[in-house]
Amino acid sequence: MKKRLLFIVNPISGIGKQKRIERLLLDNIDHTQYRYAVRYTEHIHHGTQIAAEAVEKGCYDAVVAVGGDGSVNDVVTGLHGSDMTMGIIPCGSGNGLARNLKIPLIPALAIKQINHFHVEKIDTVDLNGHIFVSIAGVGFDALVAREMKRAKIRGLQAYTKIMLSAYPSYQEKTYQLIVDGRELERRAWFITFANSNQFGYNTAIAPLAKLDDGLIDVCIVDKIPLIHLPLTAPLIYANHFELSQHVEMFKAREVTLTNNDDLWVNLDGEGEELGRELHFKNIPKSLNIITKHPTISPLNIKTDIEEAIKRIT
Image (cartoon, rainbow, N blue to C red; front, side, top):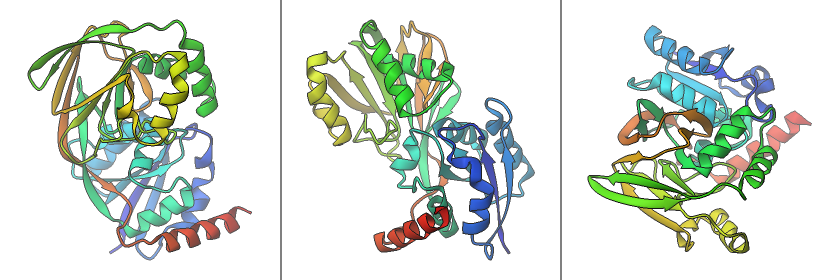
């Protein structure tokens, strides 16, 4: 019997790679193994509603998010608490979780990877009743996410413009934390709570984070002086941000943070207003997700890329 897939598409996500999704599915899904349906989101967090309805109906084997990190988060939230399998076709600008899971950023190749239906279990994190799977952050990180939410354009260029504009005036803040029962006080420019090692845009803000270790990686960052940026930025792209003198990192199962005076949180790339007190709790291996099949060789992927390029051109 063929498996049934539901593709939830955010039509305004990222830089527009999702606009040809129906044609890409027709050309690349294995029709001998799968039947599928496509639903388009019509308003903010509509993906959560569609995913929850799919769980309730019980007629699908997997729900696939087609969009960026925010779209992925919406689907994760809708599937939370169920055994439903999730897939990702990354069409956003950051694509943090997809990068961590080695899901191809070319949609045609991501579909081909779904054909193998290799499923693994990964952790999620509960934050004040909201579920995230990649990254949450407070401070400067949340400010940028809030402004990105208000911006009319997306992508790395818009992110960089907002970051550089806000950088000079944003000051460090004092936070109280309870980390697995241990009380701490830290003054920080921003604090990131990571389940995934990817911040998006191929930057590793928490390079030691693992999706299935039952732990949250807490990354506390001082305000980095401008003269230190040329030394610090390469560490992010080299997966060694922990080596910076401006960074403190540790792991925990549960964290409470107070004095979030900005009220906003970067939640999987989207700005959300969640209040001054935040409670983070890792939920081990609570999400079934389609990821890279261990037997797929780089040669096969190279061939698939060449085939995809031919289709485009």
